Length: 297
Ligand SMILES: NC(=O)c1ccc[n+]([C@@H]2O[C@H](COP(=O)([O-])OP(=O)(O)OC[C@H]3O[C@@H](n4cnc5c(N)ncnc54)[C@H](O)[C@@H]3O)[C@@H](O)[C@H]2O)c1
Image 1 (tube, helix red, strand yellow):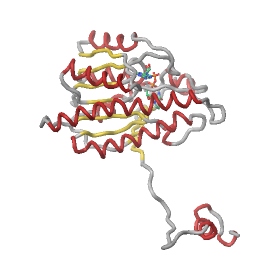
Image 2 (cartoon, rainbow, N blue to C red):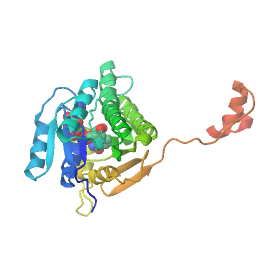
Image 3 (cartoon, helix red, strand yellow):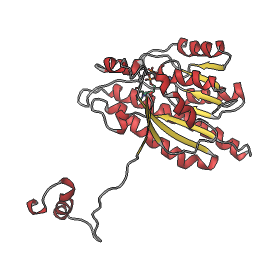
Image 4 (cartoon, helix red, strand yellow):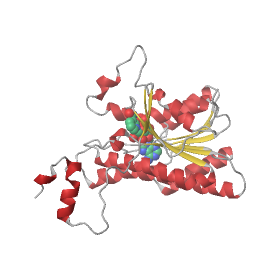
């Protein structure tokens, strides 16, 4: 059976929702878990240590090992302190699951500067800062000859990968996270780090705040609760194993469905050996737009 026995894992945003399920499942598989959660509201306001602490209490009650951390992962020093906590408490760090997130949905015309900045910060910097500090530690370990597999798992969203209207801040950040994961896979390969990304679908306070989703997300399929956030964790645990064969991949996961997501790719090409004019481009690109070349002026 797949095990995370003895591996040290940080899971951000693990006080509630999907991250909480990761923390419980990782501990069940033998990992020692740093349960990070700032404990704020859906929109990122406020803070509360209770969510992280209650997940730790649940893990310990079942005989697992865990420590609570309430640092803000979008704060450079907070992310550094989080990574250091794993090293101080458990002597190492093997796995970083970047999961914490907030929402402030708004159309582009109605979005305020703060709504843009806060959402982009929690997701993008909140993924990058812990990744940076973990990578600095992993590089020093590798250089010191302590070579072993380390795993990064990031959390994107179909809202970003497939451009959901009304979520420009969240979607842009989530799409950026998928790219960050791929760049981490390429840059950190030399330190034996694999980096993969998920785009989950589950019933949490985040999705329940979206009008219309509650009805869909309470539906079952032949008694299987396909929207249970616990359905996401086995894939994340698999991507966190020491012999995970993937790096640079993004997977959609919901219920019993796991789909590999294809990255951006180059498609039809027009090319000539000199700079294009606007008129020549209009003619050359017409077929891609479904326009008859004869109709181009
Ligand atoms: N639920 C879904 O269907 C779905 C779909 C796509 C992506 N996601 C992503 O999955 C991740 C988990 O979301 P969820 O649905 O479980 O939501 P959730 O609100 O239940 O959990 C997110 C947790 O992150 C914590 N958090 C927020 N900002 C933080 C910060 N700066 N530092 C530390 N912790 C912080 C919150 O306190 C909260 O407990 C998010 O990144 C979200 O964008 C969820």
